[in-house]
Length: 360
Ligand code: IPM
Ligand code: MN
Image 1: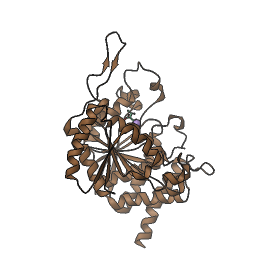
Image 2: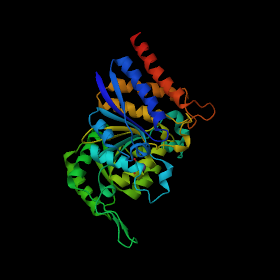
Image 3: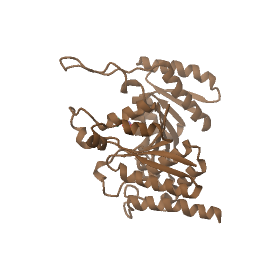
Image 4: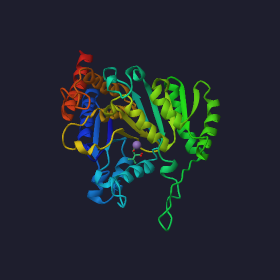
């Protein structure tokens, strides 16, 4: 089959890691007889530098007409300490989410037994953790109006807004995930304080009855932040609003000790976007040291979204092999570090080699 993949490397290490995911997908294409047509476009700071806009129209059009989007990372430190900057790379990301209608961000958090010692938590607490954080991505305080400053500049305000239908569709998706997993859903909110959270809870309590096979649990966000590091194993699917999800998903991503391994998907109305959860790691740009695995595993999620299950499995198997052999970048193997391209080449090669084994 033929698939068109909008390829958006972005900033910092983005281009280097995306290239490795492209290699893995090309291997998959060879083995399973698919043609992936990688069409490149600009996003983030590099797009601002080239065309003055972090999510140019040409990039959006390409995303709209593609089967999936493979995304690297965005962000450039030159914008971080300049509160007066008019355009920022992050605006590109928010615009992309809004225009593509990507209302759900899905971050599976899994541990890799040989890497549990890397966790900031005790090994016995983290081992075997396996959960998914589902974050609402196009609503809440990130997009609510009004937002801005008073005329004298001394008051700033943002508005948190949720509509019933926005809450329903994200909870529906969370229930679908829970149904395919261990049938446990944690709805995270701040219903003791916020009106939007009370709407979330009201909607969830109604939907809970329609999903009687799933155990629904409610948790305030502060308590969830605590329980996540105390008992990560108790979570299966966690669903929450945009800003709580932003914070909790970062917290969740480090507890396995291997942030460089975690992929994500953003799905919704139009084309889905697949990207590593880590950022653009500017200090490592061009050094060929960044871990490409999170992006390669994002490519596996991308393949699943196209219903290419065996193909996704082929990528995961190859990744598991390099992890077991400790053929890894410096973040995970400082004694005998491999480069970004070495790890990428190895994974691409293993995908081919494993298929010969299967055929033989
Ligand atoms: C993320 C990032 C973005 C967010 C920023 C870069 C706008 O932190 O994808 O989690 O806050 O959503
Ligand atoms: Mn974030």
